[in-house]
Length: 416
Image 1 (cartoon, one colour):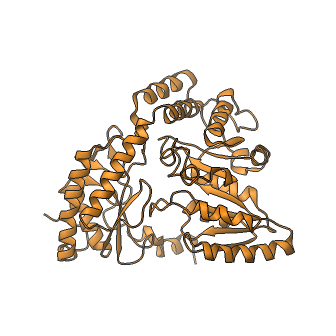
Image 2: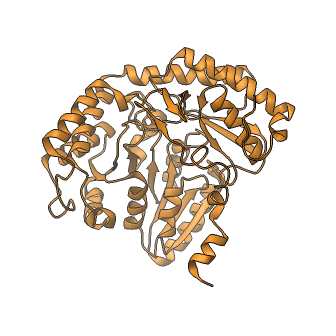
Image 3: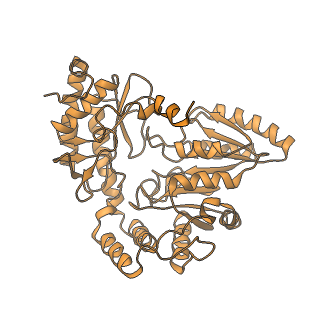
């Protein structure tokens, strides 16, 4: 069969739904200044889909530094891979400040979060090693696992009994192979909002010899007393051997970092292929990152405002009888029952008639028959935004329960 013909016959689990009004559900275009209220299809919407947790995307100090850095350095500097010609004092300064903030020896910057975690996993393990990981790990972790040519064992989400059984299997194998064990989990799981049981995993270190890698994309800046993340929140930051996060969430930027023991971070500098063979992070993103980290450290009101909105959102939904799962983080999933077309009609109603924009998540990300509407609160939302949103959700849930969206057709027709 012709390769392209084969691809067109099966467009993949998401691509096969392209016919349902592309650029509305998939690849939508939010326009205007990054803020709780933006424009969508010519209409102002209250948006809950931006990973701008601390509201730094349009913070005046951040915008000023970003603009000045772009004017002073351009987007090309430094030119080349970090190891060759792409290093600078500012890159090293950001690494030192991140390491201090995370209470780790050292940090290595990475160009992107998705690419970064994959590359770190690839660099850490070989065919003799065993990886044990949480079943609900993000796609970037799963893709990193695909690069591993050795054994890997999965345990059900946060199931410490199963994790211990997998560690027993892994220990037996590595005793024969001479390899080591890497446990991978997330600090905050981006769909459910659950925290990884870092405390429970750390407790198993007294019985088994393994290293712990935590991807804390949604926890960095939002969790813990200082915002240092989920390890700080659970009191086990010192038990995390490698702490990974992205700048794409609380920092509202591009880039990532991994923190840990100095010698291990140095090993990663010389062995992480995506960094050795890729251009360094442009200077404006580094200078901007320094300013964002400074604000994160010195202006706790942003995290306080975030959690004020988080509590209002989550308490409000629960009070109205909505199922938001067991989230213990800002990530707020609202779980409803319905098929793909009911979901499409509900979301169109929510956006067009109520001016509420949030992400719709359906099978295969969640089980068949489940509609997840994911709310991402930020520090720049208001209590009035919360009130308006919950009222709109009550109305669309009522229509869903009455079967109105099931009768509205399969093209996401506007439901009045």
